[in-house]
Length: 541
Image 1 (tube, rainbow, N blue to C red):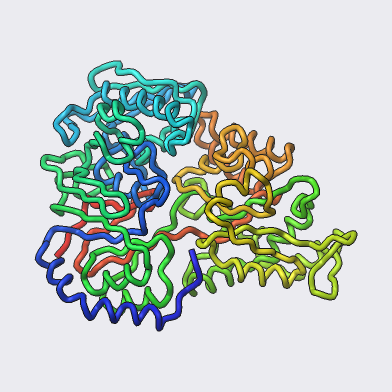
Image 2 (cartoon, rainbow, N blue to C red):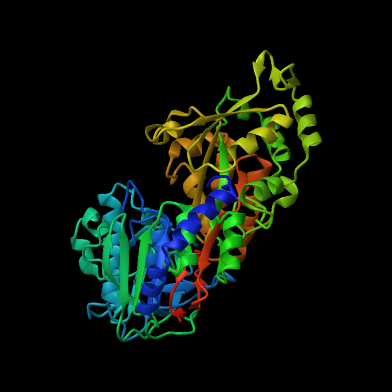
């Protein structure tokens, strides 16, 4: 994420691209049913196309179109619906999930997708967790999974060590997409490169060349699209080519010139790029990525400024989230409302608690003994109220946040991290605010940031709240997850969202909005519940 670019720079790049773009436009037209998609660059440190291991959202978007899942999730309601599984049952104790599969489904290599194949996938997931020491992204989706067995040709049972209400949603995700079990004979590294990765989707993974392109080709005979798509049969496209483009302006220019059909940025489009796309007759599709919002997490270690609850409460009032969103991303950008993005099931708005109130922030700090000095910053007992905020090249609006907090007398000190420092700064604890997020259409994703027992960074989880507050968070997750009562899950997550703000554990900054620039030649564009690209109904004129 970064501040908007000047219009002149974007326009100049666009003119240069358009001047040499007529040949590309003719090529795109001649290709007919080949869809060309320009993505954000490939992961520089972990290039991977294996469903279970990958966390890069662009590659999860590709996977969605060549590897199907047991279930699907409605983007509008969050409801889980049939896909490879026609139906399912959850045992009263919440530890056994039984799925009855569709008949006649095959992988793209012709092998049957039956109960044994699904059980073998479960074994492969568990083995991959062990082989990668839990580093595989899919590990967070199989918490408590002990195994699976075929209890009939088309009936498979998953066994969990304890109830996990998130597991059903996990079966709808790309990370638990079902692949030919033979792939698990390859090493995790070989599978990341695409070796043996064969799904049952409406496209086939033709090849994956890291940092260059990924190509999908149409699957003949496909006939088992999920309940959420209109076209349940073969794809209407012959081929889809995904390439990786670093510059936002180049990606936009390629779309407008006709060199590509979809421009898929990691950052939301600037207002200028949005105007260029719409004026050309193309359109911008957008949907918030579900899961944990782009948020800041405090270091509440004793002696640090954010160990003071008054300072944490003052931060909420001192940050003008509406101005932040409009300044960094444009006037129509949605304002974040809580710890989760608005597309997350069980989302509850916390807007009232996050309302901008500068006088209120100043009073809280006054009452806590933080007095304003000659330099405009506050101090107490001779110590200035300085909050260290390590940032990277992708941190959004850091200078604006710094300016807003200065109005309350808080010195937000920005420190740009090197790549090496990024890997260690949360472990070392040399920060007051750490930035992170997690994309998943289930609020249980937040436990992998805040619950020290399962967090990806135990150090960050332990520092984000006091032991007493951490226990409160764990208890609420336990109530939400270890039950088969949907009402209890929903009420517990609502209580959790209140608790996180009341205790000053999460400081949401902005809704993570997925944009896609779509050519006027493309029809049937759709987002999945994870805000990934769904190609079942896509055609190209």
